[in-house]
Amino acid sequence: MSASSNGKPTVTKAVLAYSGGLDTSVIIPWLKNNYNCEVIAFTADVGQYEELDGLEEKALRTGASKLFIEDLREEFLTDFAFPTLRAGALYERKYLLGTSFARPVIASHQVAVAKAEGADALSHGATGKGNDQVRFEVTYHALAPEMAIIAPWREWNIHSREDALEYAAEHMIPVTATAEAIYSRDRNLWHYSHEGGVLEDPSQPPPESIFGITTSPEEAPDEGQIITIGFEEGWPVTVDGAQMKPVEMVEALNEIGGKHGVGRIDLVENRLVGMKSRGIYEQPAATILSTAHKELESITLDRATLHYKDLVAQRYSEIAYDGLWFTPLREAMDAFVNVTQQPNTGEVTMKLYKGNLIIQGRTSPHSLYSEEFATFGASDLYSHADARGFINLFALPLKVAALSKAERE
Image 1 (cartoon, rainbow, N blue to C red):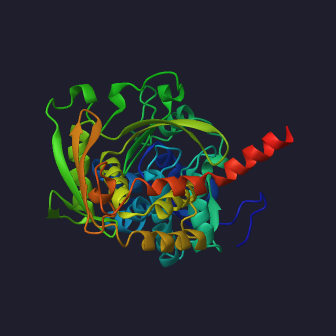
Image 2: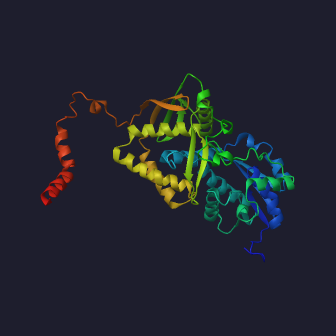
Image 3: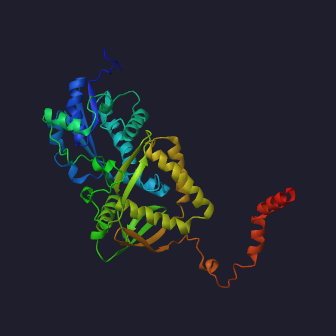
């Protein structure tokens, strides 16, 4: 890879991860003007729905030579979302990582397009303050170390979304963002996120107008809805007894959960780059599946395995959040998770009611729960008197320490 006199790489053809939003719409002409290169746009369909309408015409009109759109919804769920679900990963107590693992799947296919098209550079629209720049670029480095990486937000003199709007107006680039609706949004099957604008003040509630796929709990139906989720070895497979493919299932649960106001979270998170940021997330299907999965594990996993798996889940969430998907550590963690999920087959029934998920029951052919053991009544399997010896041994270190302390004093 050669470099020009100004230190920039000499690029003939770049593939841009393109959403059609404000940033990437501006980046296409900027790349052409600043690198004098051909720009190919790449869009991954991970569940953006109407956001994909008219995208090819828009990309070509703003200067791209062509646009590739690939339907990655099935892969996104089966290879990224569901493994993260089985791991129990939850970043900073709330976030089900919808954007985090979307970036590696997008970037991996962007790399494939770049290689097929003979490109020598990869580009993205992530800002220099966000996590997505890391997620995109660590994937680029893992899968295409020979290619140049162009991150316009780290190079250009556009310093805000207001500046980007001015650039778009000057170059007659059609965008839907306005100074009044300046939110940064990301939508896929697993969630719908909202950042920026008035949301940057964490002391203020989010305006109801920002929500796109969930009903306000106050406006949700007055009658709750009962649903049952079935799992096989930790993989979600049925809703109310009906077999469903991953995309079909998540779409159905997003609709059901959204109608009942389930899955809204307001999170102030610690970004990888070192600052805190506030995001509003709508994740109805992900919340339903995550809650059901954890409830099923409560009866299928023994105490030691469940507690250790929670430790792994914490680390797994950090790896996914940081974009380190294509790493030996994540693969090794999946191997551990696969073993823990072998008995995790069964069903969980919940009631959805005004933003709440209320557990109604859990069943599994591998359940470790024994009513005969758990009962407070008489049992041939367990004698209350046996507890005395157990407690004496369990407390022995404390007793010895206390006696030693008393003797010294």
